[in-house]
Image (cartoon, rainbow, N blue to C red; front, top):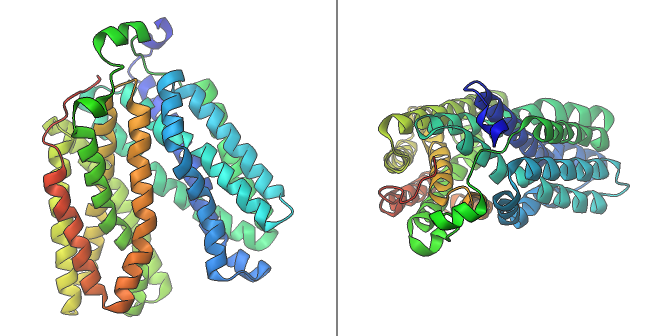
Length: 398
């Protein structure tokens, strides 16, 4: 406790940096496999459907262990979970890189995802634990940038390496990054201070927050609803720009990249805003309303074939990702230091499941009817989330 208490104000930013790097390593491994698709098709003759199985492997692994890693973080602390999980992720990625066959590589990528899931709950807990409530929204908004940054790094490195040297060498990149993240977590991260379990029991901090209030369940439910427009735009914006708006692939890709970067900046801005107003959930409700309005506007302007629809699409892509950091921070604060890991695991599991359902369902809607109608249907989900978001957190750990 003395070592922890001795950390000065600047050191908490190091904790944020290490936590961000851990989450970036997870994103590079889990999301970077998608950049192997061209090589899988060209060198191994796989169909798009079969490459989808390989690409989905680490994501499937992540979904199966999120709550488990969260529980371990609640019990043993963040540093051990991050160091152990990322070391296992590096070992699994190395095994996939050296695998003599695609089926074994796929299995090892599932195991890598299962291990890398340790970063989802534990890295967020580090940020929430070290930053005071009045700075926590901003810090968590910065931490949420780790996903687009990780994907950007993977996009720059994995495709050219895979094309030139093969899949094995391409997978050496996430192996190396996960190994470095495991080391920085082991030697750089200090677990946030929290009461001893005996003291926490007397304070009621060990009580199950899901039994005493519906607040967490409502945040989880509203977050699942808010995933629908986010992944609708993420998945089909590129196709929409090319097939419906006549853009070439390069220009469309650049616009999508810019939208992602603006979305990352939007998460920071909304986090800072939540610090200023002293609430995570009021801004979450307002952002949900904004997302619903923008998705409906996108449906109308696209249906009328107005050129401004492209601008609305960019605005919608920013607004639909903004609530993620708010919900994540609120869940950790309300659940407390002894339930935060499991609660964040449940939060992420629900979002991952929803994210896996949205692309095929809305792809079918777009194919059967049209983009405008699909955008209009997606607008109904954030509108439905507005009354589901609870008014204020019932329990907070500072």
